[in-house]
Image (cartoon, one colour):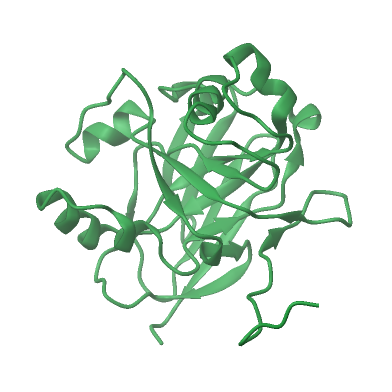
Length: 232
């Protein structure tokens, strides 16, 4: 038995709809600017040559229904509602027409972002890590197996803040499709079961304050709920 100087962190996992076994999270990849309207509202243009990515560590995983304390170091904490892809088989340098076979399932998720830190990083041409890889900032609902959802395309994706709809679009509005994203990412990494991909957010992102309740949904998938707590 291996001895450790301190106890290793417990693995992060998320539930699978109607199943007892949970999906263990390995890595979290995130697609930037995958909805043209969101890119425009942030003052950016979509790069149509290839998707681009940032990452979140497993410590960012928070279960739907949790209360997330308002994080330190920011005065502009934003919600971003997203489709989440869960990888279920090894994938390396695969073609788009091979992607369906490596997807375990899909879920709803929130990419919570320290927007003021992101703007500061952009202005200095620095990485986004402190704005995106925030403890508890990947809020994930239960996964649905791929075959139960069917083809991704016409499903509605939406989010309400304190009962008011803020984001409302279709998954077909994504610049890069599920097949294109997974195929492209598989040429950069050896994807494996446990890898999640958050696929970008539609227009309508905005700030939250302590006491806010966020409720997001995607047709055919379990929703995601988050309450924002006071700062610790």
